[in-house]
Each structure stands twice: as structure tokens, then as C-alpha cells.
Image (cartoon, rainbow, N blue to C red):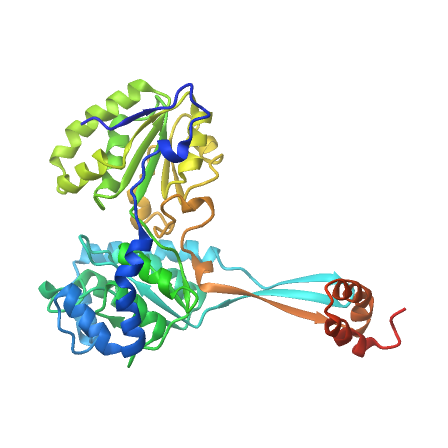
Length: 434
């Protein structure tokens, strides 16, 4: 198959915001579609959660919470090879998450004046694990491990129930929860799960932060509750960009484009290259590989939709294109790949060289796969232990240090006509300020 070609050679001044493809995701429209669900949960609690679950998932819930016995049974029945892989993913992810923690830092501003910066974990988080086309036990790992490492004391997970699983979430998801020691798990999906976490319902305490990927309705619900609690991001469809030159193996490039297209018909896959020969060879490889994939229909939809090959003049031009597109996942397969990769400014995660495919990052690379989408990597970062920490400043001055700072407060407070601010200092140092 042939991907759409976008030839930017000789067009460095092209408007890349319109030239580069990306799936349209209208969260604003979805907000109005889920508003009644979110407000229903806010106003009527668990009854509204059950009604929405029956309507959208076809499951009549008696208890929202998954029984402990079901979690243990899922773990007991887990394939040993899958369990071993999950345990290794957890181990690797704990290593990186632990490195993201920050110690207290005390800075001496002047003699007698210190500010201590301390990172405190939030008290309670709600982790959402999608359950649409694919089961995502890996998302349990990616959301829960950094929260646990950060020291969050209360974790709850929600994932959609399925009739085929006796009204429970996917057993792979349940087994992973059990493996991590998380026993507060709810058979609730979609906008109703986000609202349940944000407002709390009977038997479910509200949370401070909600994280986890989901469809456009989950993103819309997050938008509605933001401010009531924190959120990680309004996640959109997955995306990959590959920056490659004539040293890249076209079979590897094609396989990696296909791997992300496998997620969703709205997934975006972009090859950015200065080699027409590589572009041609990748098209040939796609023609070989796509027909034999299991999820051919949605892969073809993604690759013939919001995907393409961008021809650039050189790697410098290619880096510019990649930084503007700001991919969720960016692979760099060029000569001197590490040097090139270290010049990237905007991407959720960067995968360097021929032996580091994005699919490694989805599972056991150690990095988090909950990453900014839709170009938001220009200003946002992926999920980490710091997503569950909040910075607090502890300020401590002696009387002498306050006396020294008082003239500045007097000048600035006077300029802003906030004289009570000035007096709050003056009352402490009366007679000392000249």
C-alpha cells in the first residue's frame, strides 16, 4: 500500500499546522454528549452510575466494586508467562519512577531566611483503565506504579465491565491489580467512572487526581471535572512519527508504523524522511506486512486516513517537522541516531536507533506509555511519579531577616495599594525600619 505523500522539499516556510495530518477529535462536542451523565452522577450518585453502565455497557451492576475473590481468581488463572512479563514490567517501571522522586531542597535566600521545597503525594487517586477493543493490563502498570512510588496512600482503579466476563472488567486487568496489591477496583467505565471518581458516590470516596487513557468521552468527562480534581490530560488517539534517513531498515519502519495503527482507526502514523528511496521501500513493506496482520481493517483505516510520508530536504528540516507535529511517540532511525534524537524538543517519548521500537515502550522499556497526544507534547509531559506529587514551599524567616526585607515589602505593597500587607510586616518590626 502507498501512504499519502507530503512533499515539503523546497518549502521550509510551509504552514505545517495545515500540511501535517492528524485525527480530528472534537472533545467540545463530546462534552455536551456526556454532560448529562457526569451531572447525573454528581447529583444522584451510584444509581446514576448503574444506569449509565446499563445503557452504555449492557451490564446490570449490583455492586460497583469488584469482589476481592474475583481479583484473586484472575491472578490465580493468569498465564505464568504473562505474569512473569508483568512482574518484569513492574520492576523496570519502579526503577525509573523511583528516580523521578525529588528530595527536600532548602535554599538560603539571605542569612536567616530559608525556603524549603517539599514534594508531597496527593492523598487519593483514581486510575482509569480503558476496556474497548483491547485489554490494557499494561496501563494498570503505567498508572499505578508511579502513584505507588510517589507514596499515594489510597488508589482506586475503574475499568469497564463486560458481559463476556460475567459483568466484570477484563481478567487481565483484574490480575494486574491483584499483582500490584490494589484491591479497590470498580467495574465502571466511560464518563460515569470519571464522574464517580471526581464527585464520589455511595461507597466510593472522591479522589484528588484522575489519570489514565480513554476514548473521547473519557476525555470530555475529564474536561468537565477538571478543577474539582486534577487530571493528567485529555488523551487522544495514539500516534507515532519516525524520523529516518537512508540508513533505516524499511521493514522496521513499516512494522513500527503498523504497530501504532493497530490501536485505533484514528491512530496517526508519520514517516519523516529525506530519502525517497526509503519512502518507496516502506510502501513496499507495508504492502507485504499489512495484509497478514490480525487487525488489518483498523490498520488500513489509520494508514489511509490521518497518516503519511513527509519528504524533507535534510534531517535539520525533518527535526523541524517533528517538533511542530510533537508526536506522542517519536522514533529516530538515522545515522548517529542518539545525537539527532538529543536535538528533539517536542515529543512524548523518543525511541533511539533500530533496536528501540515504540512497542518496547508500551510494555517493558521502563518509560511510561501514558504520553501527551494531539501535539500537546509542545507543553506537556508523560505520566510520572511527579504527576502524583505536589510541590509545597515551607518559608521560614528570623526577625533580622524580616527587618532586612521590610523596605521591599513597604515599597511593593505601597505600589500595589495593599497597605495592610505593609502593616502585617511593620507591626512585627516597628521601630527597626529606617
